[in-house]
Structure formats: C-alpha cells, structure tokens
Amino acid sequence: MASVRESEDFMLIMRENELTRMQTFANFPDSCSVRPSELAKVGFFYLGTSDIVKCAYCGGKIGSWSRGDDAFGEHLKHFPLCPFVQQRQRREQNSTQQSNVSFDDNPIVTERPKHPQYAIVQKRRTTFENWPNSKRQTPRELSIAGLYYAGFGDNVKCFFCGGGLRNWEPQDDVWTEHARWFPNCGYVKLSKGVTFIREILQRNSAIDQVSRVRHTHEKEAREIEARLDAPSVQTVIAMGYSRDLVRRAIENRLTTVGDDFPNLQSLVEAILRIEEKHEGGNGGGDREIRAGLGAPSAHSMVVEMGSFNMQSLMEALGEIENEQ
Image (tube, rainbow, N blue to C red; front, side, top):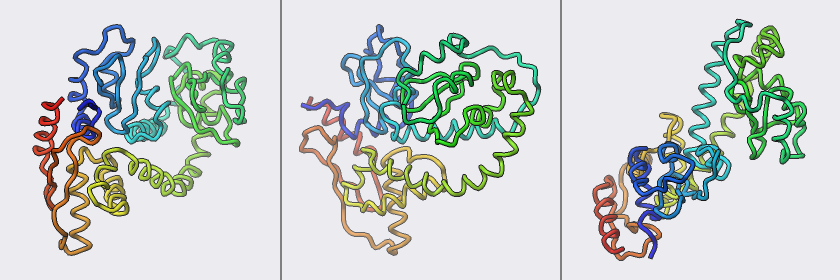
C-alpha cells in the first residue's frame, strides 16, 4: 500500500510552510551530511525511508546525499522546472539586479573570497572536466575570470563573490557578464578596474531595458507551462476544470502577486472567481476528487462550487492514515 506521504493531499499540506515540512524529519538519519533544516527550506519533506526526501511542489525525489551536497543546488540540478526552484531563482535575480543599481565604485577591496579553495586559477580549471563542449566560452577563459564549474548544466560560480552565472549565449563575453551581474565583486575590481565595470553597466542599462521587454512574455509563458505540470495543478485539472481556465488563474496570480498559490484552496477559489466573472456565476453542480491521490482508498470528498473545505481534506487524509 502506498505511503500517505506519497499522496498528493500530503504534498498540499507540506506546501503550507517550512515548519510543516521540518516536522517530517523527526526520524531523519543523523549520518546524513545535509541538515534537515536546509532540506525543508528548499521545499523538501522526509519520506521516512533512508535519506530520501521529496519536493512538495514538483514531486521530485532525491536520496543518497553525499558530503558537500548543497540542498538547493541538487534541487536545481535534477528538477530545474520545479515552481519552487524557479521562484527562488527569480528572487535571487531580482536581488542581483537591485545590487547592480547600488554599484560601489570604491577600488579598494576589503572582502575575503567566499570560496578560497578555488583562489588558484589552476584549481578552478580542474573543475571544468565535464564542461559542455557546445559552449563557446572555454574553461581557460572562465577560470581566468575567477569562475569555476558548479558541475551541472553550464552553471559556474565566482570563487570570490560567490555569484553564479548560467545560460551562456555564444556572443557572451566572460568578463563582461561577470561585471554586469556582479559589479561589486572584488576579484573583478582588482582584475579589470572600476572604470571597466562602470562602462559595462552604462552600456547594458539601455540594452537590458529593451531585452527585458522582449523576453518577458516568453519567460512568463515557460513559467506558466511549468506550473501546469505540477502535481497540485494536475489535481485541479482532474477535478474537471479546463487547462485554459487553470492557466488563466495562474497567469493572473503571477501578474498581480508575483508568487505561486500557497495551496490548492486558493487556486480553486481563483478559478471560481474567473468563472463568475466570465460566465455570470452560473456554474454547474458539485465536483468530486479523490482524497489521497496515489493511495488506494474508497474515501472521497466533495468540493462545492464556490467553496473548498480544507478541513475536509485534513479529515480525509486522517482516514487514509488510519487505513495504513
């Protein structure tokens, strides 16, 4: 019989907040090199077996953790389209853009490298053993610019400021991109000078504004499609709501709030509001979904048009647990 923790209903509860996920790690093995707090923070909850954890947002599972593994890095590596991962990347990108505005043109560097183990260029060069051959940027260029390979995709990080760069285009210049996204990096300042950084920022400010408008629609479309594949959204579609209606609800949420729906209830309520607006509120009868997707059970709960009772979900989940 499938575990309750594998069910969609349980995942919905785990999506509520980090503390809820943290409570599942009570029996997590102490020998694991990654701390439960780090795993819960990046969307994972414990399945109760070995060191296997599951993402509450995309359903991805990861186990066999090794020393040196980074919880979010592994999440990004294996499940790059996860809504939680993409949301965090957007926040980091926004933070980076804000830091670019407050460029400190003081040439004196007092900071210390964040990853001193890669301070020597030859050491950084050795990390590029599996660097994609399709990329025009060479390991030599990247390592000279202070970057080392993160081990997946085309992701690289700076040994000094810790900034990460990815999605390299053929025309991208290594030093230019490093200075553009991390203008306050001490290594860039010492290597290229503040005049170089200032020129890069001035040159790209106008280009970025035009490019941002051009790519916004494409990026939003990709993000919406990724969310439509999430297990929770698939549950709503299985309830009988059209994919187009769900897409519109997600698009409205991202446009007005800039964040994902916190739970299934809020998504259903948003869909109902759209139906009321465009159809005059003359919806049909009741809808029914199974409690505990993936867990065999005869129990079901009714979701009435216009209301979604999360307490019913909790009660149904409790009944499933009693059956185990």
